[in-house]
Figure: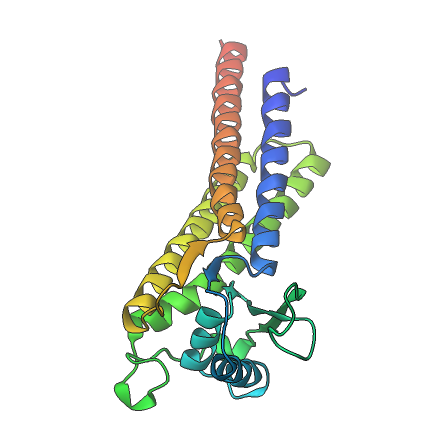
Length: 252
């Protein structure tokens, strides 16, 4: 028979874990980690230049400088697996006063995620920037590790429920703690990578960058996993102490 305090703590931990996992999954699958705000385009020359950037962005070869410049100039957003630009829904660019704008996105393929980052974006002769390369790889691998840890914790918890045992609770709590740390490390790697990118690839005039809601979702999911871990560890330790006390009492 499980004490009511432990049962309540386990239910709260499950709710926190589910919320954190949902938030992290949404963050991974959306592109609003970082967004750029560009000024309104005026002049035929500027329109032609942006159209050329957009076509290269959609159909050209994968190149960090090309897609970064396009994101800067076309109100782009970039996430862990997606990069998007805000363009006119019509074929004629920026000709109508109230033109409808839509997000046009391209995904990062798995080989592109492992593409080296260079000291000068777009210049393959400048040498690989190891720090930026591994920050980029960590930012998309760590959230997958986090989800894997939570999945393993969930399977372990399900088996524990079938066996009516609280013994694995400590291990489940540790898995949640590691998942929260991986998520927090993901956000840190992403922010550090974006900061380094902006140092080697300066933003154009009047272009501003800001954090998006997808990054905040990932940031929120980390403490939720850690709170779930704290509750699970508390249940495990308290239950073990009570068990040993009851065992000693019976022996006495």
